[in-house]
Length: 277
Figure: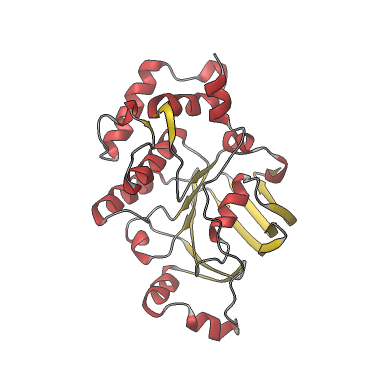
């Protein structure tokens, strides 16, 4: 069972503090949902966990099964079992989805355990069918020309293939219509087991109609200020966040606008594998 532990995490960007003491523990088999107003640090937390170079951790720690995550490069974090489904996946012209996916899968495996072409194709096509994606997806360039919903399904497709230990889904429900959300939710639910811990970042209760959460957390001003069950999310969906602010004496303040940019991972497991002959 994997254990991701975040303890008193502080992070800043360009000298501005965003995370101000986040503590959270996610174990295999658990699903945690994080909600909160825009600009409170939710997506920043996901980016810091995966090692986005824009952010500087100034205090606190992140460990995965006791290993220091902050001491790992991004590709090492991915190899260790961390996965992030991003809000705005990048388009990569010239690299097909199938080439990208096979390189990513094999980059996480030892030489003796790499997938043969036949086994990869069979597994990949099965996952595409599960997500009700177009049959030509393997031959299209990575996310190029994809709709927002197609990109989100492609992120879950990668998750199905990589089989991470801890998966972070950053607003995976945005851009999905009701039918697509149901398909994505069913596939994520099918992957849930004692070996997989999930962190869902979302604004809406509707995601939890398809992916059940064990814990719901509210983030404000760079901290987790309240935790509870799914009843907490239902109340927020009905009444908003003002009652939490009043209850805790929190004044309106935005930490910083979440950066409107795509994640740049630099040297990652997939990039490294693709560059090999």
